[in-house]
Length: 302
Ligand code: FAD
Image (tube, rainbow, N blue to C red; front, side):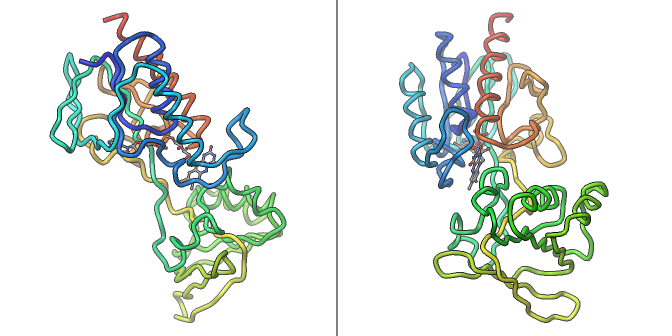
């Protein structure tokens, strides 16, 4: 069996692999798409010590760093089940069953899409999902935030401090964010809130120039001119395959303690698929290192 088997090859999994391999223990990493979400990212400007890079370049650097060590890399492999035991078993969609003394889950997450015309076509051309990542690109411009839950309202408050104007568009007749956030939002002069509005399209040819929505009360179609749209209707952890085998939060995130330990002995988790607050590359990487050290600690005690 592997000493450490990592499932997921994003920043969290790559960091875990490097840290585990450097302990001289038998390490494997199985992932569907090595690199993870950074493969879909254009510019990265907040990974400390790297002033500026591009997602695909960063993903390649992750893989190169892992390949520098003796790690069994299993690409294009999707895990479908996890079984507890003295030796933990990870079953892949291919039918293969991998055995490991410890497992690190780092399957990441995906932004929920709004699935309107223009979203896919204008991704990274004005359609964004992460205010911490892309907010500064819209300095002095007009943006919309779609979604009035906590993440949408937080994004609108955050962006209002950077951009010229924010329009928050919510489908429901009221915002669902915590009252303190709503209060803060209402105190901001450069934010408009549109309720009961169904976004129907994000428009623009090679970059975003606006969005259209249906006023759900009147049925009327309306338009807002702007340069950016932040879709904030949820981040979905890639943990569907773990339901029933370990403890997940109500949002489907893997519950972890401060050491990355999950509810299953010998199984650790790191990055966007967990309850760790704030989903960022630097956080996921740090988390992966932490989970690997915890797994190593577990191995020397068992
Ligand atoms: P992920 O990167 O999601 O990697 C998950 C890995 O698990 C992938 O290899 C995936 O293929 C694999 N996987 C999933 N399910 C399975 C399965 N069942 N079996 C096997 N493998 C599986 N953060 C920043 O800090 N700065 C930025 O500028 C930035 N920009 C972003 C822009 C975009 C468009 C997006 C989408 C995200 C951005 N982020 C940014 C967020 C950042 O990418 C994530 O926080 C980070 O990638 C999380 O790392 P992770 O390793 O936890 O998960």
